[in-house]
Length: 432
Image (cartoon, rainbow, N blue to C red; front, side):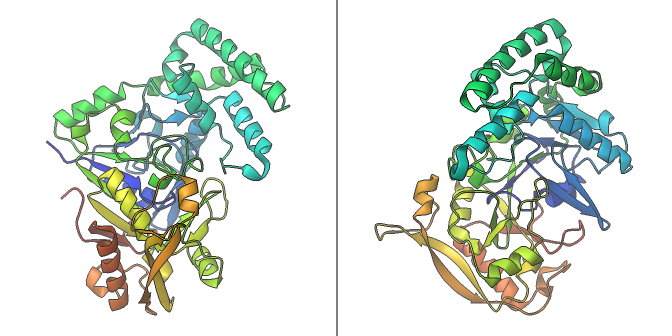
């Protein structure tokens, strides 16, 4: 049977997964998104041309590939069709013909967005940092068994009944709890009518289709969104996303058996970033942090929000390796570290009681009390941008990468030295 690869973010998201999925996709017959929503931004650069994807898998630029949205994804129909239109305008061929959407995907509708934004406004200084796009409330509907799903588009009368019930439920919260404007049935139904006929042909039994590929020996790539430290169970709760971001979620989110997941590639930056609120032990508030942000263009591809920057955290990566079963790691944005005189690596934490640990604890309260323990290594002045062979990296850059391997306990499989497909060093190919 073919080797299938799961690509996940091993930090707080924004690690550069899109480029790596796009690069690996050439080896496969399909790419699957298995969780998250259009709060995920995956940036691809091919031949100097930038493409930003939010819902559609990062294999879509390979014109012979099928792309799948599994049932673990919550789908905003407006965002999805907007993204399809952007790709069509950019000349990407047969997007709607190659995109397959699971019938069990939960829809994000206007009342989800209204409640998400009303809640965040009500939190004041206690904001979680949500994108306000309705992701969390849509996942709540899923767990509460009141979701409107893709399959509901095929039975309009039942859909109307479910929709009316949901709108009544949400309006109680909007009007009485948050003092916000209610949503109207006719407005929401008009949105559904607008997109239904266009989306229905894309609805496919994704689970069966992927299993058929597996039985034929075809390779499949599973694409995660956000990052491990934002996982709803294992991240810095409550400053997390609303889905499971771990490699294991690919099985449930795509509807495939666990034995189909053969290799887990964890993507990490050569430093650490975080968007929004929540604890961040290695965060920098000095010129070095500002320099990382500037050179790394650290602004969210979906929200435009500035990312917080800090030193590489091997203790946090160790937790990600443990909960994901990471087979190999991919280091991205190594070139952003060029020119730093001395580089720190966090190898553990000192806890408030004076004890020490070499792995990130669970929950935001525990992480908030962590004081990083650093090792300092000499930096390098030479440019690593665009280098394609490991032995052509500066000696200090190679030493830095080797120390990351030792500190976190997983091998480096790939090093990315720039945003383009070709700016990549391969040490161990995941599909080899």
